[in-house]
Image 1 (cartoon, helix red, strand yellow):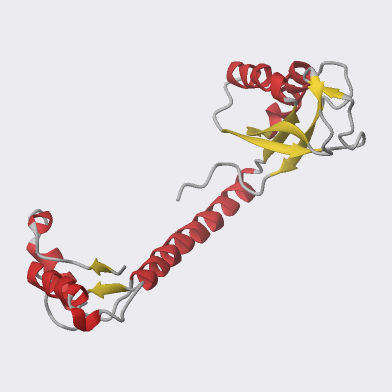
Image 2 (cartoon, helix red, strand yellow):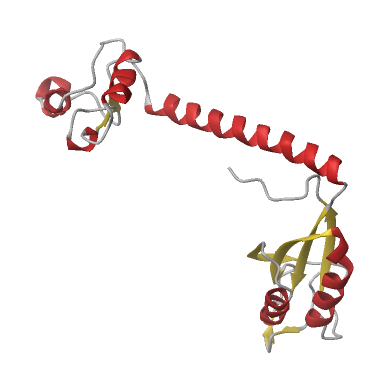
Length: 205
């Protein structure tokens, strides 16, 4: 099985482009024009004919310049990395200027306590939160006779990992509320890890 990967092709999708934008595209293509639908059709006919029967598992770019899909993706990723790096530099300068620090709390709790913790997070009006399933153990090594009413013999117990970000001045109060909501008094209740962030605000990209 093979595939074709058209580049900029003259279709109704391009109708909304301004003439100067389309002209800029054409300047970047060595052939000097955008593709036509018959260019795509000819490539498909070639791959479908007997003469190409020994070609398998290939993607044929139809771009007029040898531009591959993979290199296009690399170019997009490079652009994202450049914008992210610029955002990081700006954020660090702002953090140093304002003297502000963000705290990250990574909360690891038993699954049945996750809802209570998330309720507290909502009540505290915390705007950034990430939740994911996790497995792990601490000092007890996960070797508990029973877990959630059934036998559990694996060393890694199921947990829920919750990450939140708060300003430095709210950190102590937030940590206290979270710990009180997660604690049951039994072994293996969970942990809260605190990290200092290098900049005061999330970085959009």
